[in-house]
Length: 294
Image 1 (cartoon, rainbow, N blue to C red):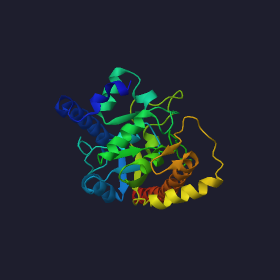
Image 2: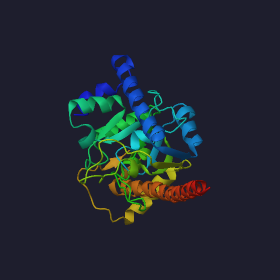
Image 3: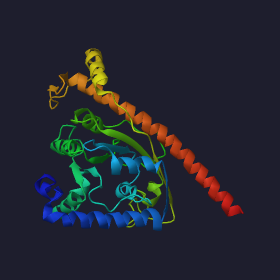
Image 4: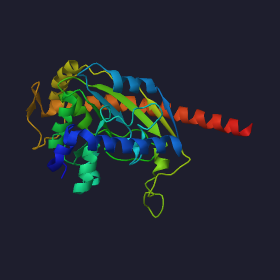
């Protein structure tokens, strides 16, 4: 369904008016949830604001984050000072096809909201990954949830899917990769609120915390050479749907080694941020308690 209305994702669709209306409406919703009915603190927001608004022309940006709730995007962009309602600056995001693109109405809405449908289990070479690559080729900002699904447990970052790593490796211009970790979103939209279901509306009076990291640097030429040499000893199983070679002459084993190496680097950075986020949340909780006791 997502592919059939790809035209709705173009910036000139009906003069761009529907996109601006959807981005503005969703942006206002995100601002309300993040700031009016809940409290959101952001650490190192300047780095995100700078890369979204004034990175060098033609340089794509990929932000990666943990996935705590179905409201992570767009609410994580609703904090004070972020241009949430700016359709031109708004992120592109990989979105689950079975949730966001179930029918024509939802498909049209999420296409206007700059969402790219991804089929779970469809592999990293499914057709819409090429659409994501096209956006990166344009120098756009793309957000991904590399864990692949919502996890509301306070647990270490899980093994990452290879999709984000493949986009980094295959993009014509190496993207800036910025890790982000957040906490508290699972309290605003819990998966098991009543009768094992999510609440119909976001919950209020919750505290959310967002920690923005530093850009992760990838020396892709070195990583590709390492993948070529190490893949000779690889134990990766063969996949008939996997392309035998890609640009750069990497065979299947080398590609998988490369994507694993990139994913592990991202996961390490995210786990480091997760620990920082827990410290910030604890400090904020202690500060609130001390203020209430005065």
